[in-house]
Every structure is written in C-alpha cells, then in structure tokens.
Image (cartoon, rainbow, N blue to C red; front, side, top):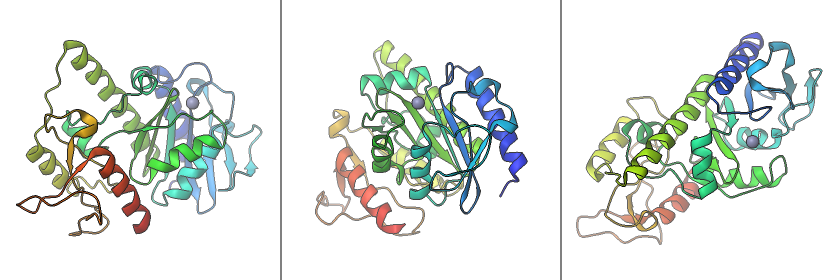
Length: 278
Ligand SMILES: [Zn+2]
C-alpha cells in the first residue's frame, strides 16, 4: 500500500493530467484511493482538478465520515464508497467527463463493439449505467449494477467512471475509454466498423491472464447481427481458473457444445456469477 504522501501526490498528478487533457472542465470530476482498510484519500468538492495541492485532500472512512482535511470531500463521494464496498480489489477510483466518451453516454450508445484489441483485454465492453442525478444516492445504485463485472463504464448523460489496482491504472483506463470513444466516433463517421473475429476475441481473452488482468468483463464478437442481438461467447472468470460461467436457463448449446448468448443475457449472467464469487 502506498504511503499517504504518495497517494496525495498521485491524486494531484492524475487530476492535473485529467484537466490538461480536457477530461474535466471547471471543478468537474473526482479521484480517490484506499489509504488503509477503513481509510480513503479523496479529492475535495469545488476545486479544479488541474490545480490541486496535496494538502487539499480529504481523508474519510468507508462510511464517508471525514477524518481529516480542511475541505469537504467530493460531492460524488457516495459513488466512490459504493465502488470500494462492492470491489475489495479496487484501490483507486477516477470519475471524469471526457467529452467524446460522454457524448456516447449522452447518445445512449455503449462502447461495446469488439474493434480494438487493447480495449478487449483491459476493459472488455464498456456499458452505460442508467442516468441518475449526480451526487445523490441514485448514482451509486446505478453504478452498482455494473461495477462488479466492469472496470470502466459510462454514466448516462454524465461522464465516465474507472477503477484500478492503483491510481494510475484507474486513470489509464479513463484514457483508454476516451481514446476508444474517439476512434469509434471516427470509424462511425467514416461509415464502417470492421469488428474483430470471434476467434481473435477469444484469443485475446486467453491472453488476459498473461497480461495480469484480473477483472472479468463481457466481450462480444461480430456475428453480423445488430449489436443488441449479437451472440457472445461466455467469458471465463479469471478468479476461478478453468471454470466457465455456465448458464442455468439462458442460451442453448449448439451442436459443438458452444453456448451462445445475447449481449444482454451475457451481461446479466456475468454480473450474477461475479456477485456469487465475491
Ligand atoms: Zn461528474
């Protein structure tokens, strides 16, 4: 676990990068990290993330009570607390409003097409959590639905959320989402997205362990079907080597024993399975 001074410095640096890259405007966005079993370091409310100093940070417990700091913690603290409660493996949470990804979130278009290998291996598909009023208890509830199976998601009509095993891994996932959104936008403007084949998607899936990627995430491959009807291969959960998430009622095995599911069926299945594993 990083020292408190290191975490404070890392949050300042991540905030500076987010602001410099236009992922936040004005006082938008928030960042936090685990300091101990019941301690978080978190950005304060109402500060520009591009101009923070280490002494501005708040220390809270996992119930959101302020332990230390001159300022109040982020107005989105409830969302951060929910992530840490649901994901004991997560050490850091980053929230921002990167404009291209947020455009997809406003349009209601999830970033769930298999088009980029690095996205498939690091994040899988990127869903959209339902709209909830920022800073209310509705937002953590919307996030809860996806956070157990996803390290990154869009927040409808709001922004994006990423998590990681340290501050930089959470931040880099935010970069990946925005980069992916940019590329997806350009491809769609050009009128064509060639999706990665099912075989290659499964190969990339197999490499996740090699890359040390723990968080399971749904991955879909092109079946020449509309995305919401696209058949998906069941994803193997890294936390249970060798085990497949076999549905009880969804999907029927084909002749070769392969089980195919729609994207929605797969998402629901994985979320249930992950919930039971944790
Ligand atoms: Zn926000």
